[in-house]
Image (cartoon, helix red, strand yellow):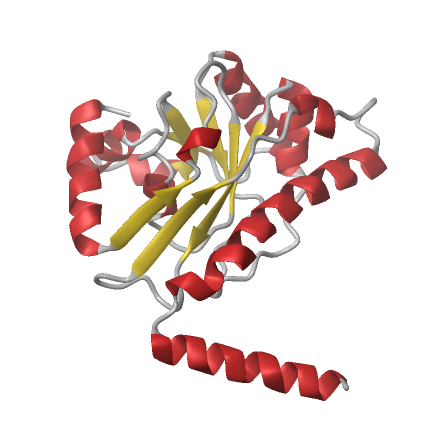
Length: 220
């Protein structure tokens, strides 16, 4: 990421949102890693560039680069173009090449944005990238309640690195790929679940606890 753009955007985001980052001590300093995060908003790729010491890259549809000024801007934030309809393995190979160059790659395993602080099952792409690259995985939880709006409390929580040997797969066996994906998604879900109540307003927390109590009563 261009340093000037990075710090300028970071300053703006700090003004717009009540933003904090936890777990910086878990960030590797040497080789590139796969940053596996839940996906809450269009701002997520930018959130995930602020705390990393090495360059961060992420995928963006190629149409976004047609406007030269906006294309320059998102490239400065680490975006690289992906053609719609391109094969999944082609995208995975691109990510592997970026990791091998020493950069970090952001992956949103859910594949789409979630409306709530609840992490979905995820797709196997993140495990395939990890398997083919041999890179470690850094799980991250992006936590805010409701919609992303002015002065919304946002916590970026960074978990402990999942070492490559923990998610190694032999011959890309589907069962092992699935297990690797579930290991990664479990780590991301833990970070979000453990943080959710801390980003709620008193009213949101009250409603959340009432809903939890109602759900418990229904299961009895």
